[in-house]
Every structure is written in structure tokens, then in C-alpha cells.
Image (cartoon, rainbow, N blue to C red; front, side, top):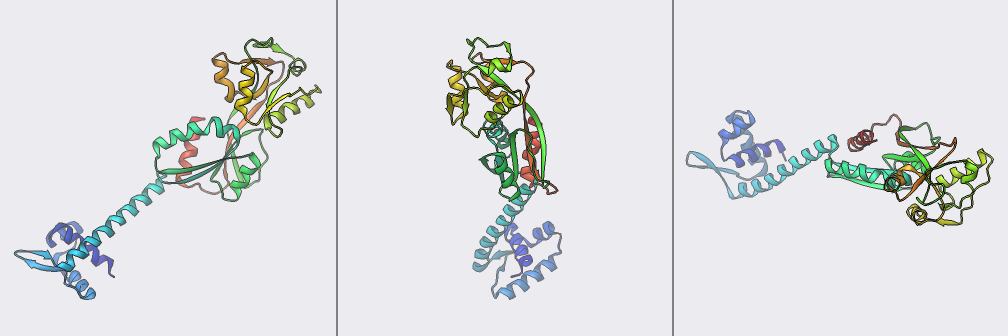
Length: 295
């Protein structure tokens, strides 16, 4: 089927006038009339008939006009979809993130992003940094966001540090060490409430003890979830070693207090990772730009 001729017929049917169609399409009336007649011959149907000083649709023409209207409306939708996709207003972003950014940063970033780009779908997978890199390299994720020690990663991955986040020692406000400076050795005499074995923050605490040749603390209370561990410390038991992102508001409200350990300052690196030398889809590029501005 000659789609160009169908489009000419569609404009004539929509305006009810060959003259008006000629003006809209910048094609002479004789040329339009000739192409429509050729189209009618191709189809083996009469689409237009004289009506007074103008033209009218035949029964076959009316039926075809309705189908053509649907077709070209769909074409407009396709054009709009492509324009929005190119501009990043549509698409699907897949994010692989480690626990810290997934729980305490990404929700706010996504909420702001979705206010601007409502039609962009998003999938967020919370995992460890090694698996986040694997997903990125295997094309299962568009971007990876991690928080922790600066990780070694394959050359195929480009890591952009957004900011650094301090690790804090925290206790309940009525604890003897609350808002005081103490030695690392004294701090390690306190019972700690931590996450399960394998937690990166827990491992960094133990590594800190090895570095300074200080006995590792007792960890008599362990939780799978970070929130539960923090609640136990707020309730008055033990100490925690945790990202400031997690407990900053508790400290501000007076529900927790910092302990300043002499000569100790550890930080997490919060970074966004992409595949090197590979352009991001427009929607993912828009998200990365928003993350940069928020961070």
C-alpha cells in the first residue's frame, strides 16, 4: 500500500477539502487529485465522490478514513514516544546499589527524579559491591552506586566519587562516653551491637583494631538489619560503629550521641559507576546528572 497516497487521502478526509489539503501539504491540487485517483485504482475502490461544489467520502472512503485516522494517530504517538525517549523522559533505568546508598540516598534521589520524569521506569537491586560491578559489566544494570571503601574495579568500569561519608562511634546519650573523646583501646572495651558477619562496616571496625594492635571488641548482640542494631543502642545497650548518613538525624535529635575516638577518622566513599567509553541511555544520563547535583 502506498502510505504517501494514504496520507494525502487522510488529510483530504480530515479537512473535507482538496483545496485545504493542498494548502496544508504544500502540494498542488492537480497533483493531489492525480495521486488519489491512482490510489483508488490501486485499491480497486472509489474513495471520494463529487458533492455539490466539493467532495464527499464514499462508504468505502468513510471506512478507510477511520482506519487511516487511527493509523496516523498511532504514528504521532510513536513520534512522541521516540522524542521523549531520546530526551530521557521515557525509558527503563536499572540500578545496582550497595546497602548504604540503597537505603539512605537513592530513595530521595529517585523521588526527585520521578517528579521530573514520571514515565521512566526504574528497577533497583540492593547487593554488595562485587555483585553490583558484575551486574554492570554483564549489562544487567545501567549504573551502579556503592558506599564503602574505595573498591578496585575492572578498567571497563568508570567510578565517579560523589562525596565521602564519615564513620561514627555512637552510644546512648546517658552513656559515660557520650560526647567525649576517648582512646580506641577504651572504646573497644565497650560491648558493640553490630550487623551480622560479612557486614563491611563490621569488617572495617575489626581491621581498625588489627591496624592499631588493639583487642577486638565483644559483639554480644548481632542483628541482620542495621535499623534494629541502632534501636538497641538507643535503648541503652552498647555502642555502634556506623555511617554518619545512617545516624546523623538520631544524633541531631539527641537520641544518640557521638564518641570521638582520638586520632581515628574513617570514611566511606559514595560513588556512581558506569561502563567506561559507553554512552548512557538518555534517561540514565538524566538520573546521573541529578545525583551529581544532589550529592
